[in-house]
Image 1 (cartoon, protein in one colour):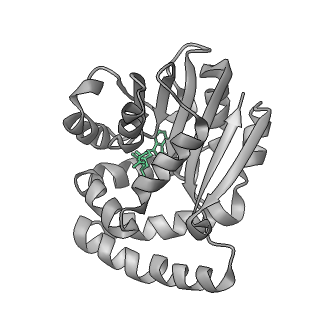
Image 2 (cartoon, protein in one colour; image 1 turned 90 degrees about the vertical axis):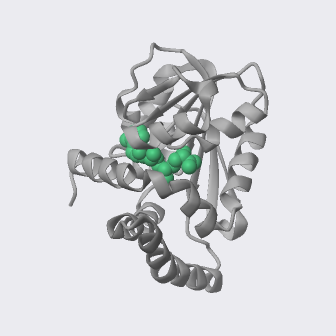
Length: 230
Ligand SMILES: C[S@@+](CC[C@H](N)C(=O)[O-])C[C@H]1O[C@@H](n2cnc3c(N)ncnc32)[C@H](O)[C@@H]1O
């Protein structure tokens, strides 16, 4: 059983180590579908140029950059890993000054600051998801919404079998070869399987005080968008 501070250190170490290969591996391992998932999640949320957005676990910034394309200009990126933030900064000079190295579980922002919070492929890595969502609730305005994009396992048995073969065998091999980090790409399938079997985001959002929570599965159920209204 890994405790909170061990998980936080492990996740920090992994993302600091793979940051330089993160974007390449994302495109390679998802065949580019990750770009479509982020676009779809943002479109489902009806986000527009009025938004004041906090992108939590922003990593190298792909969700924030996608939101910028939709006209959102007030964006803050927050992440635990300094190296991921450095690569975000390299990719997007517009966001200079709007990046914070912090954990989701202890956000350094005043109450009711943001209209939207986005998290792509980050929640699974939080060391305490409920604490993260309680923080989201606090820093969101009264009519604010949180949009979470995360991996799930397909429900269809055959697709699930094929997917698990890819996920448990091919993906760690390609990932560790390109990133030179064996731990990172064995952590990915392990964390997705654990998340899929143990975590119910709807319940956690409700426990954290959100009132309306909707989910939608994407691409054979490999990914899920969860939208929670405060
Ligand atoms: C798989 S990456 C996702 C990056 C980006 N959102 C994307 O769509 O590509 C997960 C990110 O979550 C960050 N992270 C993990 N646990 C975190 C926490 N507790 N608080 C803040 N960021 C965290 C990691 O440092 C990493 O950058």
